[in-house]
Image 1 (cartoon, rainbow, N blue to C red):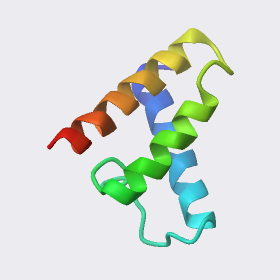
Image 2 (tube, helix red, strand yellow; image 1 turned 120 degrees about the horizontal axis):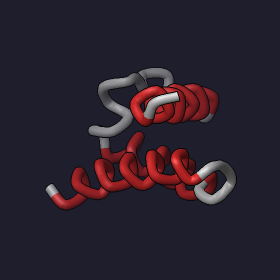
Image 3 (tube, rainbow, N blue to C red; image 1 turned 60 degrees about the horizontal axis):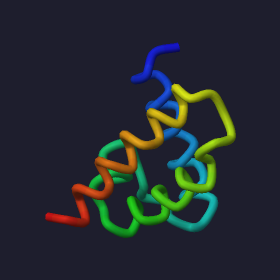
Image 4 (cartoon, one colour; image 1 turned 90 degrees about the horizontal axis):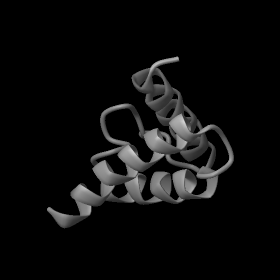
Length: 73
């Protein structure tokens, strides 16, 4: 599996979880750009870090970096 495929799967899992938590409008575009969605997604990513192979952790770190850039802007 490529890094992009792993990131896509992580994003899809995040969207599913956020929708279950009552955020019906979360999608591929806004999960990394909306501060509320991104904050929840970041905490989900952090909780899952270290539970899989290093490539997954590397993808988690890259997604967290994207979210951190959002909060700096």
